[in-house]
Image 1 (cartoon, helix red, strand yellow):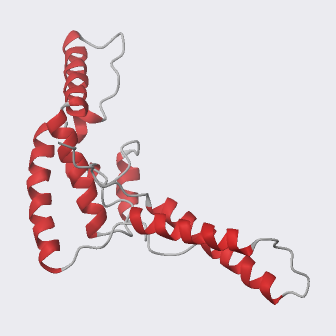
Image 2: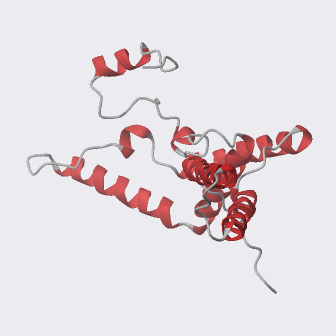
Image 3: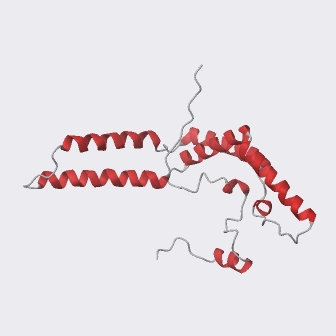
Length: 181
């Protein structure tokens, strides 16, 4: 019996790049057709390449789930989040700094325990399958959001970069991220 192939999608930025390549090739063909001095010797090759890229995009671009299918996906995501979060290190343990030589034995043991738990999380086939399914469903629910499938969203992380100071984390909340530069 053949194993069911898991769906995989290109990243939002890769999809954007491929669309840009297609657009550029189409503009190049259009400009050459209008020109008195044709520079493209075999326009059919370029048309075939465009067709090939469009077919590829169709295969690797997630289709947005809607209606009842989206509702089922949301329910499944909630189940997956429970499985993942149960095994996932909490934010404070995940971003724990490497212990110094001067740190006590208990700090080193805590750190080693966190490393072992993270290794188990990354290698457990059940968790790996749950994470993969979660990412796939999240991409299908919101194909344009490159952050949607990030499992850090499951961790319940603060959403603020962990390397910021407390004052930096407060300032982070006051930034208008939707404004343009």
